[in-house]
Image (cartoon, rainbow, N blue to C red; front, side, top):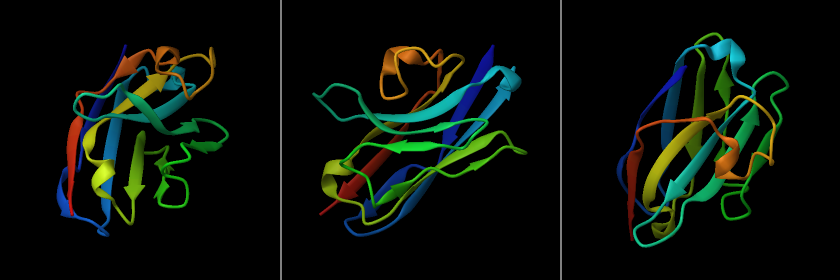
Length: 125
């Protein structure tokens, strides 16, 4: 089992920055990759970013590329989502997730085995 706890959400204005954290515990040695997804009201969950746990390769959705980064701290078993130049359309509940195997690709939610509880990010215009 892997447990994921997100933190760092909040209400910010357009153009501001915000950093989300996702701390993993439990069988963290079994993690292959971590990802961030988001879901806005009335919309489907969408991929935001992912990082391979060992190699550190990162992947980003086109909508956030150049504005968001996903650093990690392996010693703390924590990944972050650094969000810059936030836009109102970034408003959503953000979820972190852990994948144990590289099946189906890291941009697909079904590839992930564990999910956090989510944290709300609201960007006002």
